[in-house]
Length: 357
Image (cartoon, rainbow, N blue to C red; front, side, top):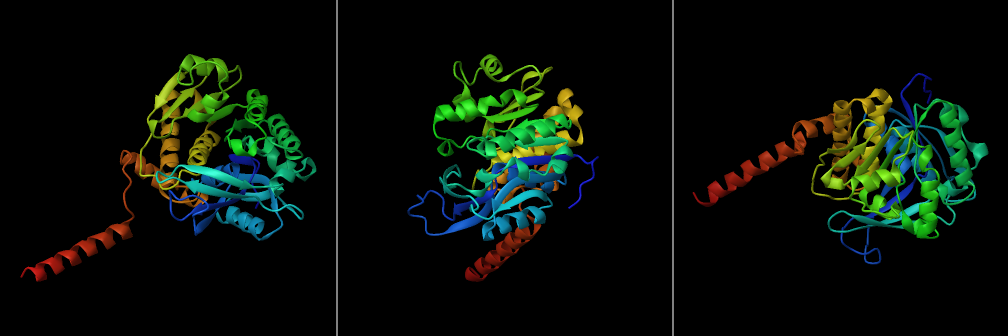
């Protein structure tokens, strides 16, 4: 796939893996009999989220030269994501994650990556030409856990920054993958001041804040804001987001509440919408009204993604998100579903009429 150098390209760097999601929520992994296989990995999810919104995206990472790895690259292509930056490892397997879902759709992860192919990504394997074309270069923290991927991550950031890209960071904390909580904090914060755009969830704020109240805006600014940062967003799920820029500190945008099936990928859907908007028009960050509209779109995408199982399959299209916003957060059933329910209602009414005639 060829991407022109003047495109609004967002390049995501990091891991892509297979999520195994239980068909029945609220059951332990040991008691789960069947799983739904779905593509996952936060940076890859973000790339697919952008493509679903008709944006331009690419993914840079490494998968195993196995059936799962080939399947993942095929999924990227089918979703319109440039996969020229993906490498295959002949020795390490594609990473796996088994996801435990509560009845409310929240999740916990059990990972199999000892090591997985993404951990073995080497600097010499980077598609430098692709990275240099990025308008925005996006990454998480999982690729910082071990070598050689950590050095590759740092090198890719440097290449993108020198080429003029905005750097976007979503720590995407997955504590079970780290040697210790302290190691996770240190590594996540080690690249904090390199970013132009940062998104953190409320639980990540609580984890990373050494001192202070994670709900206090002054303490959040003291811990996470720095000169040079263009946009800091803290997400609170259905309770919305708080945003901070050089000009606007502590603004709030409402969230959306839907019946949750699976929250895996909700933050990635949010991030994809956010980066898609900024890639189209970076000046959005400087205009508070436009910034609020951008965050409303991101919140809608995040909420909509929780209504289906799996991260990538649940990512919404732009038309769906805009209709959802226009309906003030009410999710309409698809036309075919409405027609089916209407016909069923008529049939049930006919049966009742016959019964009591």
